[in-house]
Image (cartoon, rainbow, N blue to C red):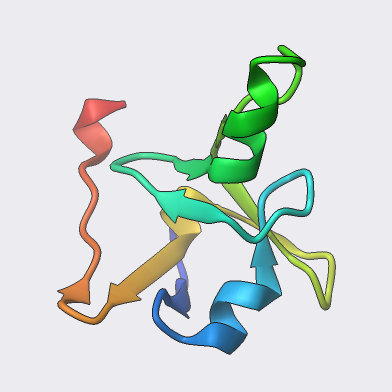
Length: 87
């Protein structure tokens, strides 16, 4: 990955509401090498297509998608570091 990463502040309401899971939910959380969505996880029991794990977020405003390795997440405790080798 070359170039600048898109920064998302996880405690910033605007950032959190701008970026959504592939199905449009805003209840996503980062994990080490992907993302997880609480709403997709709740629906997963009824619909196996609702995989709660995914590797891209979509910008609700622009439609642009960013892979996990193209995003820099910043938490109140500092940058959220993930380990690519755990993939």
